[in-house]
Image (tube, rainbow, N blue to C red; front, side):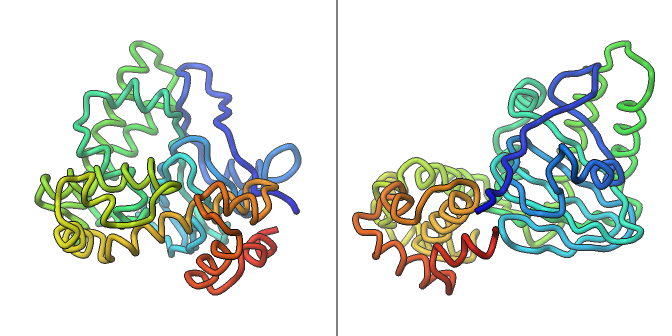
Amino acid sequence: MNEIPSVKFKSSYQHIEGVEIISLDTIKEKTGGSYHNSEKPHQLQFYNIIFYTGGQSDQLVDFKWYPVKRNTVVYLAKDQVTSFKFTPGLQGYCILFTQKYFEQCFGHLSKELIYRIFNNYLFPPVIGIPQGSDFIDYFNLLCKEFFSEAKFEKATVLSSLFAVLLVKLEELKQKTELHIPESSKLLLISKFTMLVKDNYVVNRNAQFYAKKLLITYKHLNVLCKDILNKTAKQFIDDFIILEAKRKLVNSEIKSTELAYSLGFEEPTNFTKYFKKRTGVTPNSFKNQHK
C-alpha cells in the first residue's frame, strides 16, 4: 500500500519565512521526480489558498471533487487531503503558508472571521469571485509585491495585503447563502465542532455535547440543521468518517487498530459503521486510494 503523502511546507523563497506564492504551472512542472505527484491525493501540513485565473478543471478536497474555473478560490486548511487535475489552459496561483505564519500575521483579525474562512466543516472550500471584484485587484497587488525586488518592510506589506485579502473573501461570503448573520449561532457551532474534535473518541452521542454546551438536545439539533444543514448526530458521524478516511489513506494502520483509536470497542462495529455511511468497508476504501 502506497500511503498518501503528507506534504510539508518547503519553500525556496528567501525573504520571508513561512509563506510562498507559487503558480500552478510551477507546481505542474515540479510534479514527479523528487517531488510528490500533485495530481494524486496528498495531505497538507500547511494552509493553501488557490486562485484560479484561467481554464477549467476540478479540485479534490477531502475526497470530494469540486469544479473550478477562472476566478474561483479554493481554500484548504492544514490536514486536508487534496489533489489537482491539470487541464490544458489551467492557470492560477497558490498562496502557501504555515501555522506559525498564520498565527503571527493574522492574530489581529477577529477569531470569528478566521473561523469562518478556514472552517472546512462549516463552509464549502470553494467560492466564485465575481468579475470586477476588488478581491482580484488586491490579489494581483499581493502577487506584484511578493515577486518584486523591493525589500523595505516587505514582510509588513505582504502580511497587510494578505489580511485584506482574507477580509475581502469573507465580505464576498456575506453576499451569498453561505453567510451566517448571527454571531451567537456561529459561536455555539464553533464550540460544538471543537468539542467534537476533542471528544469524538470517547463519545459519539449528541446529547453529551448539548450538555457540554449547556443547551438542550433539541436546541443543538435546530442549530445544526439551520447552519450545517444536518442534525448534530449526522455532523458527528461525518466528522468521524472523515477522520477515519484521512487515517486510512495516510498511514499503514490496520482497520482493526483504527477502530480502537476512534473509540470503537469492537472492530466489527467500526466496519459496519463505516460501510453504512460510505457504502464500502474501510479496507476497500483504503485499497481504492492506493
